Length: 122
Figure 1 (cartoon, rainbow, N blue to C red):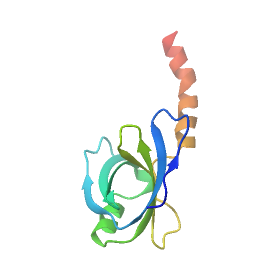
Figure 2: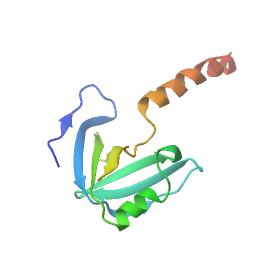
Figure 3: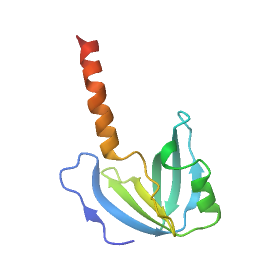
């Protein structure tokens, strides 16, 4: 693991860490819908939670990486409560990282839904 990068003025996370190695103790949590899945795995001895969207990976990708012990590089957020959340994960030799829905996409969805929420509130 490289040196953690502290984050200032973030309500949820206190640092960003970069981890390398194979995925260990991979577990799939309850899936809330067809497009969203929750997984948990260990990387460099740190337990990481991830909430993945179907468009960013297939359901078989992460279990296959764990089974084959493929080396990965990953960026994770260290939260204020000591837990770790996945930001991105890049398998060795891959071109595109596996990541939860980007923050920009979430922000755009929030802004698009705002007029509807205001109409409902009125």
